[in-house]
Structure formats: structure tokens, C-alpha cells
Length: 338
Image 1: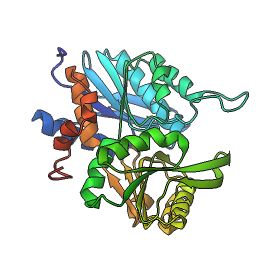
Image 2 (image 1 turned 120 degrees about the vertical axis):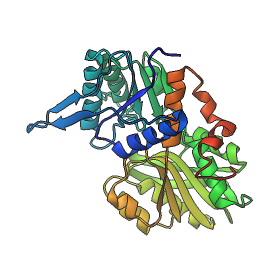
Image 3 (image 1 turned 135 degrees about the vertical axis):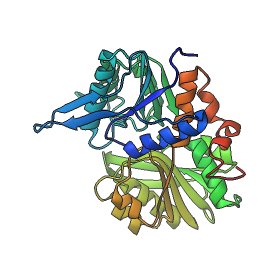
Image 4 (image 1 turned 90 degrees about the vertical axis):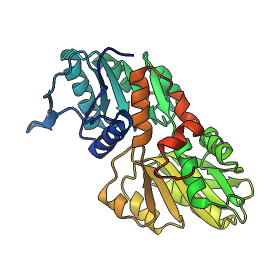
């Protein structure tokens, strides 16, 4: 057990509602009021980022909550500068809680003379003084190896499994669908959790953001299909996959996506699509358009992150949160009897 009395949470501007929700959950678990450390994170007139921490953090176990979502560069710089401020204030340990890890899609060289930006960002975070990273559903598992420090990668699939079992009730005609071959492992893991069959939508992509052709692998006729993926950006691929599944005989199409980037025309596309429901997490702060969309629903990650933070602080297992027996009590209020 660390010598300091309580874990301390501090938040940037990327997703303050999630930080407040995590603090409330930590308060419930600890029986003590937990609030994010008071700090000023603002910009000068020339857009330079300035951070000032108002509370004493000397010797404290600090957790910085800051997804690197849009605007990715600003939020990343906030994370780095906050880390430097805490390190120079003699914090005992600094853990970066990054619910959505930006630049994760640039995890390899797909063509000549291109960067591996995910590795560069990992280097920046480590060099700033972060000693541990807590994140969720990295786009590629190998990104954990880009860091020369401990990385705890949480998964949304256990939460999605609870949500599906709660809302779908009858599971006989449910089928999990991976929107591409690369996401099969993620989809298979969820399918095993809920005891459902698996199908794949094979896509041929000409260039980033554009899909030329899609083919359904597996029989989806008469099935309620659930597309599972980690990121939904412009929603072009997702909506086209839903169309292809309906044309192949599916009765309904739902989607469970961890990170709702939802940029550009995404919300409009989803609203007009054949998808009955898109379920995302709050790893990225939802816009007003997302909140107002009739077929988009948000599930909270605060219970999971709060428990993971307490487990890291207390030196206990984080991987135990992947088990349904451990996770169900944490989400009992949302999914009674799960």
C-alpha cells in the first residue's frame, strides 16, 4: 500500500464530465469525498497552454484524466504540460489516464516515407514524466509495446456484454459482426461472452476513409446483427456495413463502438442510416449533436475507470476487472441482476 493517504485525480479540458463522474465513483468506493485537484489549464492569446496546480501534490499518487481526442494536438499538449507541472511539484507517481489514445491508428508504416506517430506520442508521454498509462481499447494491442513503462489497457467489451444481455433479453437470433478482418479478435471475445455466433464484413479500402467493396462472411439472414468496433470516425464504413447486412437478410442492425470520434458528417449519417441503435462509451466527451441523436446511446465508463484507478493505487489486479463476476457488481446500478 502506498504511503500517501488517497489517490489524487486531476483533469484537463478534454473530458471534464468523465473526470467528475470518476471522482464521484471513487467517493462511493472509498466512503470519502474525492474531487479533482483544483488547477488552471488555459491558453494565452497566442494559444500557448498554461497550467497551474493550486493544491499541494508533493508525494502524492497523481492520476491525470485526459483523452487525446479532437482537438488531438491541443489535448496531447495539455497532458504533457500537466505532467511536467506535477513532476516539478514533486508528485510521487504520475499515471496518465487516457480513455481515448489519439494517433493510435498510426501504429505502423503502411507506405514508404510515413511516420509511426503512435510510437512518437508514446515517447513524448514517457519523456514528460508519466510513469504508467491507463487507457481503453487501444486500436492495436502492440501499442502497449511502444511504451517503456507499464500500460493497463481496459476493454469495453465486458461492459458491452452486460448492456447487450440487459437490453436484448432473448439471445437466440443475435449475431456479433466484425466490420473488418482486423477486428475479428475483438468481436470474437464479445461473442464468447454472450454466447452468440460471429460473422465478418470483409471490406476493401482504396484509401483512408473510403471503402470500395464489402462482402458478408457468414449467414446473417433472420439475425439481429451487432457490429462491434473500437473507433467510429466519419461513420461511412459503419453505415455501409449496416446497409450490406440488411441486404444480406438481417432483421436489425445495432452497433457497439468504444470510441465515438464521430467527426464531420458522422452524426447525420448515423441518424439517416438503417442502424436501429449506435451505442458508444463516454471515453470522448460527446457533442450536443451526439447527445441529441435519436439512435445514439452512451454507456458510462466511470465505474470501470474509478475501480481501475483504485486498484492501481492499492497495488491490486487490474485484469480482474475483465471478469464478469468482478465487473457486474460495479455496474449493478445500471444493469440490475446482471
